[in-house]
Amino acid sequence: MNLNCDMGEAFGAWTMGLDDQIMPFVDQANIACGFHASDPLTMAKTVALAKQHNVTIGAHPAYPDLVGFGRRNMDIAPAELKAIIQYQIGALKGLCESQNTQVDYVKPHGALYNTMMADFTVLETVMQAVSELDATLILMVMAVPEAPEIKKMAKKYGLTIWFEAFSDRLYTDEGRLMPRKEPNAVHASFDLIEKQVEQLCETGTLTTASGKQLAIHADTICVHGDGAHALDAVTRIRTLVDRLKLNPPSKTSAK
Image (cartoon, rainbow, N blue to C red; front, side, top):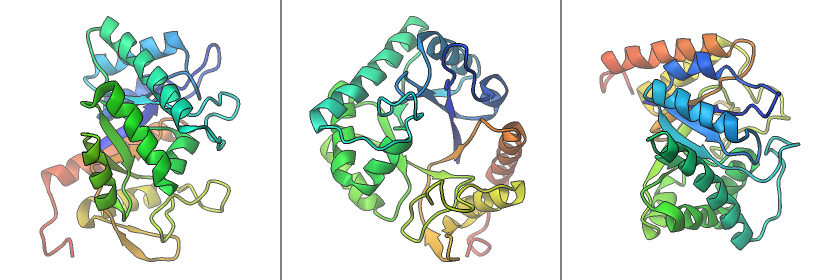
């Protein structure tokens, strides 16, 4: 199980996240591309940091919403949305090439991510945008019960999919993230976060808000690098995941 984290979300003199401290503990860096956060210099610095720690680089495109940090829904025509996504990925690809490294995958951000997981017509537009630009890029999407349908869509565009789960978010019975405005949408304790990660790794399930056991397949787990206790949370998750890799559960214990 890999760990991915949103990175490079500072903007000018405004700082966000603990990228320097978090980067050594993750496998994949989702680098903001300027539309919800970041700027060219921040992007370049984040690419250099990822390269230094041998972390796989992903583009993290968003709706054009700096004020709302990409978390506000936008009604954007498919042709425009494709151009918006390709523009952002292309910018990061250029900065990577200047440092002799590359973008390996794409993970949409915020409202764009949530919208595409709720409306597969938007997801298909995202797939079109990525495949037209570079079909070797992997698309990271949320691990949901409709995974077979998503794989079938991706195959049409020649794309590989990585499914991700979240370490610190509460899930609905439908397999989506509980909206942040709802109580307990974000796990507040290390114990809850570790329990969710351990459950994902050992049994391939999540416990939803109602207590339902939801079976999902995840290739990567999203951790967050901002907040007062982010470093503690990420280091504890890294230690837990590495321990489980060395001592994987038996088929009997996983049931």
